[in-house]
Image (tube, rainbow, N blue to C red; front, side, top):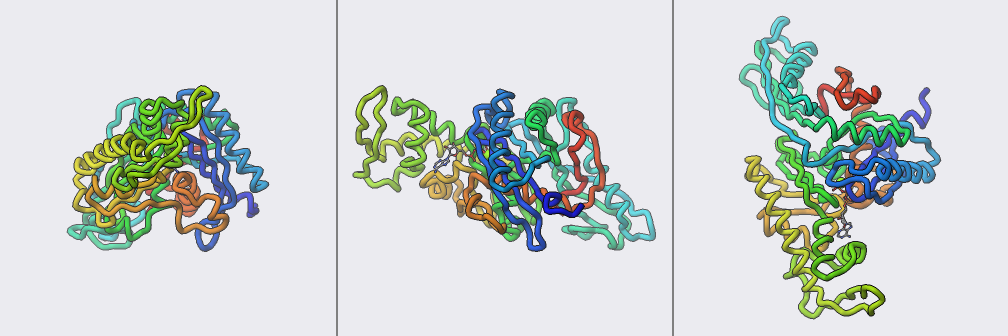
Length: 409
Ligand SMILES: Nc1ncnc2c1ncn2[C@@H]1O[C@H](COP(=O)(O)OP(=O)(O)OP(=O)(O)O)[C@@H](O)[C@H]1O
Ligand SMILES: [Mg+2]
Protein backbone atom coordinates (compact mmCIF):
# COMPACT_ATOMS: atom_id res chain seq x y z
CA UNK A 1 0.00 0.00 0.00
CA UNK A 2 2.63 2.47 -1.00
CA UNK A 3 0.28 5.13 -2.28
CA UNK A 4 0.67 8.87 -2.01
CA UNK A 5 -2.09 8.81 0.62
CA UNK A 6 -0.03 6.65 2.92
CA UNK A 7 2.65 9.26 3.07
CA UNK A 8 0.43 12.22 3.85
CA UNK A 9 1.27 13.68 7.23
CA UNK A 10 -1.18 16.05 8.93
CA UNK A 11 -0.18 18.55 11.61
CA UNK A 12 -3.03 19.93 13.74
CA UNK A 13 -2.23 23.01 15.83
CA UNK A 14 -5.15 23.74 18.15
CA UNK A 15 -4.16 27.22 19.34
CA UNK A 16 -5.86 29.78 21.55
CA UNK A 17 -6.58 32.01 18.54
CA UNK A 18 -6.91 29.61 15.64
CA UNK A 19 -6.80 25.98 14.59
CA UNK A 20 -4.33 25.34 11.76
CA UNK A 21 -4.02 22.16 9.73
CA UNK A 22 -0.98 21.64 7.54
CA UNK A 23 -0.70 18.67 5.18
CA UNK A 24 2.66 17.47 3.95
CA UNK A 25 4.53 14.52 2.59
CA UNK A 26 7.88 13.05 3.30
CA UNK A 27 10.20 13.20 0.30
CA UNK A 28 13.78 12.04 -0.15
CA UNK A 29 14.90 15.66 0.46
CA UNK A 30 12.75 16.30 3.51
CA UNK A 31 9.19 17.52 3.74
CA UNK A 32 6.93 18.86 0.99
CA UNK A 33 3.99 21.06 2.03
CA UNK A 34 0.76 20.14 0.21
CA UNK A 35 -1.83 22.44 1.73
CA UNK A 36 -3.21 24.28 4.70
CA UNK A 37 -6.51 25.03 6.42
CA UNK A 38 -7.21 27.54 9.14
CA UNK A 39 -10.14 28.49 11.32
CA UNK A 40 -10.40 30.97 14.20
CA UNK A 41 -11.50 29.42 17.47
CA UNK A 42 -13.21 30.48 20.68
CA UNK A 43 -12.94 27.02 22.17
CA UNK A 44 -9.49 27.28 23.72
CA UNK A 45 -7.99 29.45 26.42
CA UNK A 46 -4.28 29.47 27.17
CA UNK A 47 -3.73 26.03 25.68
CA UNK A 48 -6.71 24.41 27.42
CA UNK A 49 -10.07 23.38 25.99
CA UNK A 50 -12.82 25.55 27.48
CA UNK A 51 -15.56 24.74 24.96
CA UNK A 52 -15.59 21.29 23.39
CA UNK A 53 -18.20 21.96 20.70
CA UNK A 54 -16.51 25.16 19.52
CA UNK A 55 -13.13 23.45 19.41
CA UNK A 56 -14.46 20.43 17.51
CA UNK A 57 -16.15 22.73 15.00
CA UNK A 58 -12.95 24.72 14.39
CA UNK A 59 -10.90 21.53 14.03
CA UNK A 60 -13.37 20.11 11.52
CA UNK A 61 -13.46 23.34 9.54
CA UNK A 62 -9.70 23.74 9.35
CA UNK A 63 -9.19 20.08 8.38
CA UNK A 64 -11.94 20.27 5.75
CA UNK A 65 -10.32 23.37 4.25
CA UNK A 66 -6.97 21.59 4.00
CA UNK A 67 -8.68 18.56 2.46
CA UNK A 68 -10.44 20.72 -0.15
CA UNK A 69 -7.23 22.49 -1.06
CA UNK A 70 -5.36 19.22 -1.62
CA UNK A 71 -8.07 16.76 -2.59
CA UNK A 72 -6.73 14.49 0.13
CA UNK A 73 -8.54 12.78 2.96
CA UNK A 74 -7.17 13.27 6.47
CA UNK A 75 -7.62 10.30 8.78
CA UNK A 76 -5.13 10.92 11.52
CA UNK A 77 -3.12 13.86 12.78
CA UNK A 78 -0.12 14.88 14.85
CA UNK A 79 -1.56 17.13 17.55
CA UNK A 80 0.26 19.94 19.32
CA UNK A 81 -0.25 20.29 23.07
CA UNK A 82 0.71 23.25 25.23
CA UNK A 83 -0.44 25.27 28.23
CA UNK A 84 0.98 26.34 31.56
CA UNK A 85 0.43 22.83 32.96
CA UNK A 86 3.27 21.48 30.82
CA UNK A 87 6.21 20.76 33.13
CA UNK A 88 9.62 19.36 32.38
CA UNK A 89 12.75 18.29 34.21
CA UNK A 90 16.06 16.56 33.61
CA UNK A 91 16.58 12.95 34.63
CA UNK A 92 19.42 10.49 34.35
CA UNK A 93 20.26 6.84 34.82
CA UNK A 94 23.38 4.65 34.86
CA UNK A 95 23.81 0.94 34.18
CA UNK A 96 26.74 -1.41 33.84
CA UNK A 97 27.27 -2.65 30.31
CA UNK A 98 26.48 -6.35 30.05
CA UNK A 99 28.07 -7.97 27.07
CA UNK A 100 31.81 -8.02 26.55
CA UNK A 101 32.02 -4.34 27.36
CA UNK A 102 30.30 -3.31 24.13
CA UNK A 103 27.21 -1.13 24.42
CA UNK A 104 24.36 -2.96 22.68
CA UNK A 105 20.92 -1.88 21.59
CA UNK A 106 19.56 -3.64 24.68
CA UNK A 107 21.80 -1.56 26.98
CA UNK A 108 20.72 1.57 25.16
CA UNK A 109 17.02 0.73 25.57
CA UNK A 110 17.49 -0.32 29.21
CA UNK A 111 19.27 2.84 30.33
CA UNK A 112 16.64 5.05 28.65
CA UNK A 113 13.88 3.04 30.23
CA UNK A 114 15.39 3.55 33.68
CA UNK A 115 15.94 7.27 33.00
CA UNK A 116 12.27 7.67 32.17
CA UNK A 117 11.08 5.76 35.23
CA UNK A 118 10.12 8.67 37.43
CA UNK A 119 7.45 9.00 40.09
CA UNK A 120 4.61 11.16 38.82
CA UNK A 121 1.39 12.18 40.54
CA UNK A 122 -1.72 10.45 39.19
CA UNK A 123 -2.82 13.45 37.20
CA UNK A 124 0.43 13.74 35.25
CA UNK A 125 1.96 11.66 32.47
CA UNK A 126 5.06 11.66 30.32
CA UNK A 127 4.74 13.43 26.97
CA UNK A 128 8.35 13.20 25.73
CA UNK A 129 11.63 11.76 26.83
CA UNK A 130 14.37 13.49 24.85
CA UNK A 131 17.93 12.27 25.06
CA UNK A 132 20.53 14.93 25.83
CA UNK A 133 23.69 12.87 25.98
CA UNK A 134 25.20 9.54 26.89
CA UNK A 135 28.33 9.02 28.93
CA UNK A 136 30.39 5.87 28.39
CA UNK A 137 32.78 5.45 31.35
CA UNK A 138 34.37 8.91 31.49
CA UNK A 139 33.58 10.02 27.97
CA UNK A 140 30.72 12.54 27.95
CA UNK A 141 28.79 14.19 25.13
CA UNK A 142 28.04 11.02 23.17
CA UNK A 143 24.96 11.16 20.96
CA UNK A 144 24.72 7.42 20.22
CA UNK A 145 26.64 5.04 22.47
CA UNK A 146 25.81 1.83 20.60
CA UNK A 147 28.89 -0.11 19.53
CA UNK A 148 31.18 1.77 21.90
CA UNK A 149 33.37 0.03 24.44
CA UNK A 150 32.96 0.61 28.15
CA UNK A 151 31.72 -0.83 31.39
CA UNK A 152 29.36 1.92 32.51
CA UNK A 153 26.65 3.69 30.51
CA UNK A 154 24.94 6.89 31.69
CA UNK A 155 21.98 8.54 29.95
CA UNK A 156 20.87 12.12 30.51
CA UNK A 157 17.37 12.94 29.32
CA UNK A 158 14.84 15.76 29.40
CA UNK A 159 11.39 14.59 30.48
CA UNK A 160 8.34 16.63 29.45
CA UNK A 161 5.07 15.93 31.26
CA UNK A 162 1.51 17.11 30.76
CA UNK A 163 -1.61 16.99 32.91
CA UNK A 164 -3.87 14.04 32.17
CA UNK A 165 -7.24 15.89 32.17
CA UNK A 166 -5.91 18.57 29.79
CA UNK A 167 -4.62 16.02 27.31
CA UNK A 168 -7.78 13.97 27.62
CA UNK A 169 -9.96 16.99 26.77
CA UNK A 170 -7.81 17.80 23.76
CA UNK A 171 -7.82 14.19 22.52
CA UNK A 172 -11.57 13.99 22.97
CA UNK A 173 -12.04 17.03 20.73
CA UNK A 174 -9.86 15.49 18.03
CA UNK A 175 -11.74 12.21 18.33
CA UNK A 176 -15.10 14.01 18.11
CA UNK A 177 -13.84 15.66 14.93
CA UNK A 178 -13.56 12.09 13.56
CA UNK A 179 -9.77 12.06 13.46
CA UNK A 180 -7.26 9.56 14.77
CA UNK A 181 -4.23 10.74 16.73
CA UNK A 182 -0.76 9.69 15.61
CA UNK A 183 0.94 11.40 18.49
CA UNK A 184 0.67 14.29 20.92
CA UNK A 185 3.62 16.65 20.54
CA UNK A 186 4.71 19.57 22.71
CA UNK A 187 3.70 22.54 20.52
CA UNK A 188 6.87 24.65 20.92
CA UNK A 189 8.99 21.58 20.24
CA UNK A 190 7.16 21.24 16.93
CA UNK A 191 7.72 24.97 16.26
CA UNK A 192 11.43 24.48 16.95
CA UNK A 193 11.53 21.75 14.30
CA UNK A 194 10.21 24.22 11.74
CA UNK A 195 12.07 27.38 12.72
CA UNK A 196 15.50 26.64 14.20
CA UNK A 197 18.66 25.63 12.41
CA UNK A 198 20.81 22.78 13.70
CA UNK A 199 23.56 25.31 14.33
CA UNK A 200 21.35 27.46 16.56
CA UNK A 201 20.46 24.40 18.61
CA UNK A 202 24.14 23.54 18.90
CA UNK A 203 25.36 26.95 20.11
CA UNK A 204 22.33 27.57 22.31
CA UNK A 205 19.03 29.27 21.59
CA UNK A 206 15.74 30.17 23.28
CA UNK A 207 12.79 29.76 20.93
CA UNK A 208 9.69 31.71 22.01
CA UNK A 209 6.39 30.93 20.33
CA UNK A 210 4.35 34.10 20.91
CA UNK A 211 0.73 33.01 20.54
CA UNK A 212 -2.62 34.56 21.37
CA UNK A 213 -2.96 33.10 24.85
CA UNK A 214 0.52 31.89 25.74
CA UNK A 215 4.20 32.39 25.08
CA UNK A 216 5.88 28.99 24.92
CA UNK A 217 9.62 28.62 25.28
CA UNK A 218 12.06 25.82 24.57
CA UNK A 219 15.79 26.23 25.23
CA UNK A 220 18.32 24.18 23.27
CA UNK A 221 22.01 23.82 23.97
CA UNK A 222 24.56 21.43 22.55
CA UNK A 223 21.91 20.12 20.14
CA UNK A 224 19.53 18.98 22.88
CA UNK A 225 16.41 20.29 24.62
CA UNK A 226 17.31 21.69 28.05
CA UNK A 227 14.35 23.67 29.33
CA UNK A 228 10.63 24.12 28.65
CA UNK A 229 8.26 26.84 29.86
CA UNK A 230 4.78 28.13 29.05
CA UNK A 231 3.73 31.63 30.17
CA UNK A 232 -0.06 32.09 30.34
CA UNK A 233 0.06 35.53 28.65
CA UNK A 234 0.16 36.36 24.95
CA UNK A 235 -0.95 38.63 22.12
CA UNK A 236 -4.53 38.50 23.40
CA UNK A 237 -3.45 40.43 26.49
CA UNK A 238 -1.95 43.17 24.33
CA UNK A 239 -5.23 43.37 22.40
CA UNK A 240 -7.26 43.60 25.64
CA UNK A 241 -5.06 46.44 26.85
CA UNK A 242 -5.65 48.31 23.59
CA UNK A 243 -9.40 47.68 23.88
CA UNK A 244 -9.52 49.01 27.45
CA UNK A 245 -7.08 51.87 26.87
CA UNK A 246 -8.83 53.20 23.77
CA UNK A 247 -12.39 52.11 24.70
CA UNK A 248 -12.73 49.91 21.63
CA UNK A 249 -14.50 46.59 21.05
CA UNK A 250 -12.02 43.69 21.06
CA UNK A 251 -12.25 43.08 17.30
CA UNK A 252 -11.40 46.72 16.52
CA UNK A 253 -8.56 46.69 19.04
CA UNK A 254 -7.17 43.53 17.45
CA UNK A 255 -7.31 45.04 13.95
CA UNK A 256 -5.66 48.26 15.14
CA UNK A 257 -2.91 46.37 16.97
CA UNK A 258 -2.16 44.21 13.90
CA UNK A 259 -2.16 47.13 11.44
CA UNK A 260 -0.45 49.81 13.54
CA UNK A 261 0.73 48.47 16.90
CA UNK A 262 4.41 48.80 17.79
CA UNK A 263 6.24 47.28 20.74
CA UNK A 264 8.89 50.02 20.78
CA UNK A 265 7.68 53.58 21.42
CA UNK A 266 11.12 54.83 20.33
CA UNK A 267 10.62 53.31 16.88
CA UNK A 268 7.52 55.41 16.18
CA UNK A 269 7.85 58.93 14.75
CA UNK A 270 6.23 61.64 16.89
CA UNK A 271 4.02 62.87 14.06
CA UNK A 272 2.76 59.48 12.88
CA UNK A 273 -1.04 59.25 12.92
CA UNK A 274 -3.30 56.21 12.60
CA UNK A 275 -7.04 55.93 12.31
CA UNK A 276 -8.97 55.17 15.49
CA UNK A 277 -12.22 53.40 14.49
CA UNK A 278 -15.40 55.19 15.53
CA UNK A 279 -17.59 53.25 17.94
CA UNK A 280 -21.40 53.26 17.86
CA UNK A 281 -21.75 55.05 14.55
CA UNK A 282 -19.27 57.79 15.40
CA UNK A 283 -16.70 58.97 12.87
CA UNK A 284 -13.18 57.53 12.98
CA UNK A 285 -10.65 59.90 14.55
CA UNK A 286 -6.92 60.34 14.09
CA UNK A 287 -4.77 58.88 16.87
CA UNK A 288 -1.08 59.41 17.48
CA UNK A 289 0.60 56.08 16.78
CA UNK A 290 2.90 56.77 19.72
CA UNK A 291 -0.14 56.77 21.97
CA UNK A 292 -1.05 53.27 20.74
CA UNK A 293 2.53 52.22 21.33
CA UNK A 294 2.36 53.56 24.88
CA UNK A 295 -0.29 50.90 25.51
CA UNK A 296 1.38 48.07 23.55
CA UNK A 297 4.96 48.45 24.74
CA UNK A 298 4.47 48.03 28.51
CA UNK A 299 2.53 44.78 28.09
CA UNK A 300 5.01 43.34 25.59
CA UNK A 301 7.81 44.41 27.93
CA UNK A 302 6.13 42.75 30.91
CA UNK A 303 5.79 39.50 28.93
CA UNK A 304 9.47 39.59 27.93
CA UNK A 305 10.55 40.45 31.48
CA UNK A 306 8.76 37.31 32.69
CA UNK A 307 10.42 35.26 29.95
CA UNK A 308 13.80 36.68 30.91
CA UNK A 309 13.19 35.69 34.53
CA UNK A 310 12.57 32.15 33.32
CA UNK A 311 15.77 32.15 31.25
CA UNK A 312 17.68 33.20 34.37
CA UNK A 313 15.90 30.48 36.37
CA UNK A 314 16.93 27.90 33.77
CA UNK A 315 20.59 28.78 34.24
CA UNK A 316 21.16 28.94 30.48
CA UNK A 317 21.47 32.72 30.14
CA UNK A 318 25.17 32.46 29.31
CA UNK A 319 24.68 29.54 26.94
CA UNK A 320 22.51 31.24 24.32
CA UNK A 321 25.05 31.92 21.58
CA UNK A 322 22.26 32.19 19.01
CA UNK A 323 20.14 34.39 21.27
CA UNK A 324 16.35 34.39 21.07
CA UNK A 325 14.17 33.41 18.12
CA UNK A 326 10.58 34.70 18.08
CA UNK A 327 7.85 32.82 16.26
CA UNK A 328 4.04 32.43 16.48
CA UNK A 329 1.55 34.99 15.14
CA UNK A 330 2.39 37.38 17.97
CA UNK A 331 5.98 37.60 16.73
CA UNK A 332 4.69 39.65 13.77
CA UNK A 333 4.11 42.66 16.01
CA UNK A 334 6.19 45.59 14.78
CA UNK A 335 9.14 46.41 17.04
CA UNK A 336 9.01 43.14 18.97
CA UNK A 337 12.52 41.89 18.05
CA UNK A 338 13.95 45.32 18.93
CA UNK A 339 12.17 45.30 22.30
CA UNK A 340 13.41 41.73 22.83
CA UNK A 341 17.03 42.79 22.30
CA UNK A 342 16.60 45.52 24.90
CA UNK A 343 15.02 43.23 27.52
CA UNK A 344 17.05 40.04 26.92
CA UNK A 345 20.34 41.75 26.06
CA UNK A 346 20.74 39.06 23.43
CA UNK A 347 20.43 39.00 19.64
CA UNK A 348 16.78 38.43 18.66
CA UNK A 349 15.38 37.36 15.30
CA UNK A 350 11.91 36.66 14.01
CA UNK A 351 11.48 33.21 12.46
CA UNK A 352 8.95 31.32 10.37
CA UNK A 353 9.06 27.83 8.89
CA UNK A 354 12.28 27.01 6.98
CA UNK A 355 13.80 24.00 5.31
CA UNK A 356 10.62 22.79 3.61
CA UNK A 357 9.55 22.36 0.00
CA UNK A 358 6.25 22.40 -1.88
CA UNK A 359 3.70 25.14 -1.25
CA UNK A 360 6.08 27.03 0.98
CA UNK A 361 4.37 30.39 0.38
CA UNK A 362 1.04 29.25 1.89
CA UNK A 363 2.66 28.47 5.24
CA UNK A 364 5.24 31.24 5.12
CA UNK A 365 4.23 32.91 8.39
CA UNK A 366 5.39 32.51 11.99
CA UNK A 367 1.73 31.71 12.80
CA UNK A 368 2.15 28.35 11.01
CA UNK A 369 5.37 27.29 12.71
CA UNK A 370 3.70 24.81 15.06
CA UNK A 371 1.53 23.16 12.40
CA UNK A 372 4.43 22.89 9.93
CA UNK A 373 6.67 21.60 12.72
CA UNK A 374 4.14 18.89 13.50
CA UNK A 375 4.42 17.67 9.91
CA UNK A 376 8.23 17.68 10.13
CA UNK A 377 8.00 15.84 13.45
CA UNK A 378 5.66 13.30 11.85
CA UNK A 379 8.03 12.73 8.93
CA UNK A 380 10.84 12.13 11.39
CA UNK A 381 8.79 9.88 13.65
CA UNK A 382 8.03 7.69 10.67
CA UNK A 383 11.71 6.89 10.35
CA UNK A 384 12.42 6.55 14.08
CA UNK A 385 12.33 3.01 15.33
CA UNK A 386 9.33 2.57 17.56
CA UNK A 387 11.03 1.17 20.62
CA UNK A 388 7.95 0.88 22.72
CA UNK A 389 4.24 1.49 22.45
CA UNK A 390 2.51 2.28 25.64
CA UNK A 391 -0.83 3.23 27.05
CA UNK A 392 -0.93 6.56 28.79
CA UNK A 393 -3.82 7.56 31.04
CA UNK A 394 -5.08 10.24 28.65
CA UNK A 395 -4.54 8.20 25.52
CA UNK A 396 -6.50 5.25 26.87
CA UNK A 397 -9.46 6.50 24.89
CA UNK A 398 -7.55 6.54 21.63
CA UNK A 399 -5.38 3.54 21.04
CA UNK A 400 -3.68 4.98 18.01
CA UNK A 401 -1.45 7.25 20.04
CA UNK A 402 2.09 6.11 19.75
CA UNK A 403 4.94 6.95 22.02
CA UNK A 404 8.57 6.87 21.16
CA UNK A 405 11.16 5.91 23.69
CA UNK A 406 13.92 7.96 22.21
CA UNK A 407 13.09 11.00 20.14
CA UNK A 408 14.97 13.33 17.85
CA UNK A 409 17.87 11.06 17.85
N1 LIG B 1 0.60 41.11 12.03
C1 LIG B 1 0.46 40.95 13.35
N2 LIG B 1 0.91 41.89 14.21
C2 LIG B 1 0.76 41.74 15.53
N3 LIG B 1 0.18 40.67 16.12
C3 LIG B 1 -0.29 39.71 15.32
C4 LIG B 1 -0.17 39.78 13.90
N4 LIG B 1 -0.73 38.67 13.38
C5 LIG B 1 -1.18 37.93 14.43
N5 LIG B 1 -0.92 38.55 15.59
C6 LIG B 1 -1.25 38.11 16.94
O1 LIG B 1 -0.79 36.78 17.12
C7 LIG B 1 -1.62 36.13 18.08
C8 LIG B 1 -2.01 34.76 17.53
O2 LIG B 1 -0.85 34.04 17.29
P1 LIG B 1 -0.93 32.48 16.95
O3 LIG B 1 -1.79 32.26 15.78
O4 LIG B 1 0.45 31.95 16.90
O5 LIG B 1 -1.68 31.98 18.28
P2 LIG B 1 -2.23 30.56 18.69
O6 LIG B 1 -1.26 29.50 18.30
O7 LIG B 1 -3.63 30.39 18.21
O8 LIG B 1 -2.29 30.73 20.28
P3 LIG B 1 -1.49 29.96 21.43
O9 LIG B 1 -0.19 29.52 20.86
O10 LIG B 1 -1.34 30.99 22.51
O11 LIG B 1 -2.39 28.85 21.86
C9 LIG B 1 -2.81 37.01 18.31
O12 LIG B 1 -2.68 37.66 19.56
C10 LIG B 1 -2.73 38.03 17.18
O13 LIG B 1 -3.21 39.29 17.57
MG1 LIG C 1 0.40 28.57 19.16
